[in-house]
Each structure stands twice: as C-alpha cells, then as structure tokens.
Image (cartoon, rainbow, N blue to C red; front, side, top):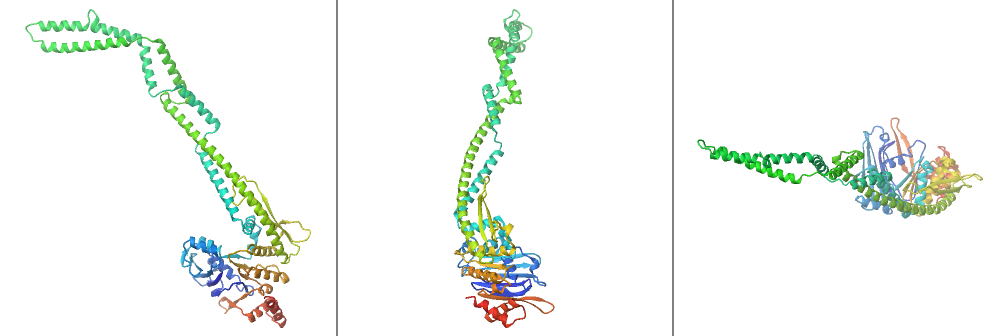
Length: 555
C-alpha cells in the first residue's frame, strides 16, 4: 500500500506531501489544475523514463519520494530479499531525483538502484492505468497476459516455458553441429568409397621411395652384372689382374739393391689391400645381383596403381599415405557427428512432443479460464451502461512449428455491445469509453481473490460516461478497494462520491507564477467540491443537496 508521496518541483507543484489511507481515494479539480500530476510523478518515480520537461520551471531538479507498506505483499518482500535490500518495519522507500542536465538517480531504501530494478519492484506494488492505457487491452499480448493471470495456472505456464527453452536449445545445438561441417549422405558415401580404395591400395610410408630404388636396380640388372664381372676380373681374377701385378711389383722393389724402396713398397701394399677388399665386395655384390623380370613387372604395376590413385585424388603420390589418414579421420569424425546428430534429432523430437503436450494442457486450462473470465467480465460491464453486452474469449490453438514460450494459443477478447450484433474482436468493436469500462471490469475480476494487496492508480478511467453508469464505475472502484488501495483521478461527482477519501487539486497564481495545491477534504468541503463538480462554480442549495445525496449513497 502507498503510505505517502513527497513531490518537489514537479510540473506545477513546488512542493507537496500527501499521506494515503487504505481504501478508495479520489483526486478532483478543475481542468488544468494538475490532477494528473500524481500519475506522472508516480510513473517516473517507479521507473518510467525521466522527463526533464517535468521539472518545474525555474528549478534545477525534481524530486519524488514514495513510502510503501509491504506487509501484505509477499512477492515484493521476496524480491527485496533476493536483491539483498534492507527492509525495516515492512516499509519500502523509493526516491528519485531528475536534474535539468537529463541525469537521474534512484534509490530503494537508501540504496542506489537502477530504473530496471525499480520497475521490477514496482510491478509487485502498483498498477497505473493512464488515460490511454486501456488501448493496450486490444493487443493479443495483453489479452493473453490478462487471461493467464486470471486463470492462475503458473505450473502449466512454467512447463510450457521450460519445454520451449529445451526445444530451442536443442535446435540451436543441432544447427551448430551442422555448421561444423557434417557431411550429407551423398558426401559420406563418396568418402566411404574413397577410403575403401585407399585401404585396398594400402600404401605404406617410404614404400614409394623403396619401389623406385628397386625398380632402378632391376631394370639395369644385366648391365650391372656385366659391370661387376668385369670389375672383379680386372681387380683379381683376370690374367692381368691388378692385384697380381701389384704383388709382383712389390716383390721386385723389395728385392732390388742400391736404393731403399721400403716406403713405396708400403704404399703399394696398402693399395693392394684396398684392391683386394674392393674385389671381395664386388664378388659379394655379384652373388646378389640377378635378373627378375616378374618382380620388375610387379613393381611397375604397383607404381602405376599408386600414380593413378594420386591423380584420382588430386594429390602428389608421395603424400598419399597422409591423404589416406586424413580421409579416414574425416570419415570417423563425420560418423561421430552423424551419431550426435541422430541423438540430437531424437532429443529434439522428444522436446517437441513434450512441448505439444504441455501446450495442449495449457490450452485446456486457458479455455476453462476464458469461459469463467468472459462470464465475469460480461456481468460487470452490464452494470456499466452496456446492459446487452455479450463477451467471449476465444482460445485458438496454433501450429507447434516453433517453440513459443507462451504456448501455441491465439487469444482474442470479443464483444457485442448491442442486441443482434455478432461478437467481434475488441479492437474492432469497442469505443474508447467502452474500453475504459471493460478494462476496469477486468481489473476487478483479476484481483478479486488476490492475496497480495496492490495499489491501483486510475487516471480518468471514467472518460466518456456519466449519470447512472458513472455511479456504477464509482461502485466498482469502491468494490476493488475492498481488497486493494485505489487512487483515481476523476471529473465525475458520481465517482468521487463513492470514495473513502477525497483530495482536491487547485491551480493558484499570483500573476507571475502558477502552482498546484493539494488539499485533503473533510465531509463539508467534500460536499462543496461535489457540488462544484455537479453544477459548476454557481453552487446552489440544489447542487449541495445533490452532492449530499452522492455521499449518502456511500456507506
């Protein structure tokens, strides 16, 4: 409940502080007196965008402070606890300062805060209905919100939200998996074929170099054998073999006299050793060399297969082994991706089924609530000057082709205000005045059984009505005030007469400055104000008597 509001340098107000009581309080005054200042100041105090033009002319800043009793508002208390904001004596104080340079500051219980946080808290405390707020009633989003709040099936709403989130999350995971390069069936089949032929070729590391070397040897085997035979004969096996001639030469030098040939003999002996070793190596190689046409043909066939495979895969022959490994790894990775995709597809289908089931349960609950709410609204608005009105709330299930967190339903409030008139969507049928009354009827029905006491602020919700209908509007506001605090700006005495408390707003001027002043009225001054609202400035005994009648009707 709003306990008090302090306003300084806002619009036409230099300074005002008002204490509020439970029940129904009205604000009245002549046109232009500043009746809507409370609505504007409270809206900006509770998180609306700060408007520099709202600062009183000549002032450097505007300031608003509101005190709330939250003893009967458990949702607000929970929010304060979650935000670790201090709470003393069940009281919340919200303060805002707006400066001429456009800067603004907010506090909750003396703790600096943000407009977003204040709006979250304010949603638990106050509902403000401005002169044009009833137009929101024609939007599908607002109609769905109203129905869901009235229906009181939070578990169903949460189940749909969770199922939609799971569906959306899995769909995003699947999309991300596809973006990582997962192959389609045709690409995967081609990859498996390529891997099979590479497996069949089975080219090993360094095999190509070994094959080329063996091919060179076998293709020149005849020439190599002849060369080795000739070399062996020349070095050690021929009639004029080098090793024999070196041996004879060394013997003659050693036998000669007159000169010392020992050093030369030693050099020749070393040469003879080298020749004998070379001859031995050649004889060993001669035993290894042989012609093998079949092996040579097999090697050439193998090399031909390797080069054909390389051309087919558009890689160099020497990197075929690495390409083979790459193809195998890619196919393995794709297989894993395909398995993950199958898992995600199955999970996605499961989430879709869960979502459809939850959305269907929500649809059924909405249909039941829609019937009850339509009947209740119809009953209320028939008291408000629409005696022949018929109301229906359509709940049409849509296709579950995407995960909407609010469910599949399309909700439409329909009304027929005259006999024989077909039911049509609210936005196409109701006038502004009718919408205001329908909005009031909805608020009364939505909060009839609420455990949390709210503060409702209505700015000229009675626009476009008068007479007995205006009296019914006042009665409905008073009925709402049985459970909640109601503040209403009105220009109708029939509405004002129903209030528990009455505040008059006057515009005063000294010729240089204009200012709004607020005054809480007692019973006598209320009669004077109601008489003015009834007959204008010329107050007569008749208008006074009629004003008293308004008050007499208020128990």
